[in-house]
Length: 308
Ligand SMILES: Cc1ncc(C[n+]2csc(CCOP(=O)(O)OP(=O)(O)O)c2C)c(N)n1
Ligand SMILES: [Mg+2]
Image 1 (tube, rainbow, N blue to C red):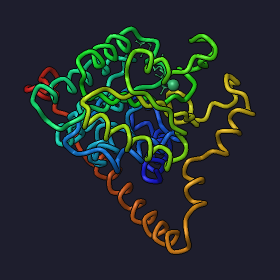
Image 2 (cartoon, protein in one colour):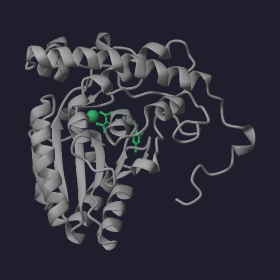
Image 3 (cartoon, rainbow, N blue to C red):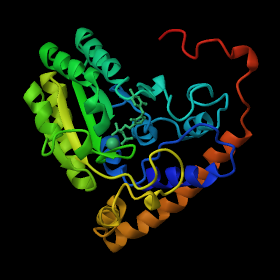
């Protein structure tokens, strides 16, 4: 969680130099589900994600240097500098792509789950989505398909209560529960306290075991909250689409502060050591990215991956 937080805060800080030219959707406040997942997912498992995919890429074991180079639009970026923040892909770790179109990567994730089943592999496919994707038709088609075909797709839904500036109340009937809706379609569905990393770990562990063993879809809903503006490096509390009361409530539930409280003295010392190492790792990734070259003009129309 600390690694995800510090990487995102560094991006936010560097953004003002105007060297990062792609839009960024940061996950500050939403680190717990991805951090817990990183300890439970296998390298061989597939993963697809959304416009807010940085933490998902890193949780799958994606290379930090390639990720930062990508958002700087440089040739050693994971998508050869042609994708930017919303188009991350790293086949080395089976991170099969992110998309700027809400819901777009869901059928790709279901297809990967079907492939795993047809190839008689033990892999599962993690499909990262936000609450906004529940309003896309393709979500229903893909979940239904996954239920009917009995495929190992794990729908990993971070419900941060908003789609851009619109709260759930103006987008869906009041009182609707996202995980119950998924359950009604026939998936094994559970809900997690998305800001408590221990709860996330417990629920993800359970979900992955079921998905891998039964070869059936699971839907997990993590209740969480984004701190920074929808798109960009700044806070937008002054816009008032979220009440100060609500913001304060969630700031008190900071997943990192909640975990820090539980550390013993010995653990705290190790944690501080880790924070120092982390800072140098991030420094290195940013200087790698800044010193890297942009893609060659001749490669503008060549595919990044010809075998996909
Ligand atoms: C099909 C489609 N509709 C609308 C948009 C504009 N858009 C970009 S991100 C976003 C919000 C999605 O909300 P959610 O899925 O909850 O993800 P979050 O941003 O909260 O992580 C919207 C509406 C889009 N990119 N694609
Ligand atoms: Mg959302």
